Amino acid sequence: MRLYLLLAGARLRGQTQYRVSFALQVASSFTSTFVELLALLILFRTFSSLGGWSVGEVAFLYGLASVSFALAELFGEGLEQASRMIREGEFDRVLTRPVAPLLQVLAADIQPRRIGRLAQGILALALAGRWTTIDWTPLKAALFIGAIASTAVVFLTVFLIGAAICFWTIESSEFQNIFTYGGTELASNPLQIYSRWLQGIFLYIVPLGLTTFYPAAHILAKPDPFGLPPFTPFLAPLVAALFLGLGLLIWGLGLRQYQSTGS
Image (cartoon, rainbow, N blue to C red; front, side, top):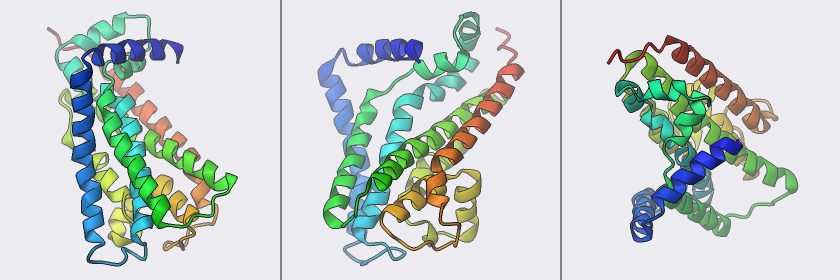
């Protein structure tokens, strides 16, 4: 972790040298994602609720998913570079260094402009706080923090699996975007509004429903539409850890598969 922080810190300092450019990038990131929140608010000018959730409750769910995804993007952007590194032979140099390859890939690219999306998610949570009444307790506060961390880990793991697949395919696949950018959209709304097969995917395969919807529903005192056990909202950290373990396993298999570009 100390080595990662040193590598990431050097990358951050390099990218923030030009302050005006950095500020414009953050503003652009905030504006582009704020449109999503604005669309959500416009929707509630026509409908009073969505799946039985009010505008404030959906804003809370949206903010939770958005903050989590921003954190995953901020620290996982290097995984998006895996395809290029493998294709151009740069990954060979990664393997010659006495540092874990995954650590090097993670530190290869840090995008501080993602702070714009993070700020937009925090804004959504602030609006939710004004529009809803939540009886906060230490347990709910811990559940909220755990939900953000767990959801960020799930998103980061999807990036990791996408990077690992490049060991076999060389080129990155847009398929993972269904579960990252598409997953953010899905996790921003009550899960019961989707079809059963989609609910199953995001509950049991890519478990965003277990790390976002269930903790949010418990915090907001919303009923469970799926009849899962009452302890389900508290499983988010365990679910995220298991999913991360699967991602690390796939990464390890891909790393052993790697045979260089031959150039």
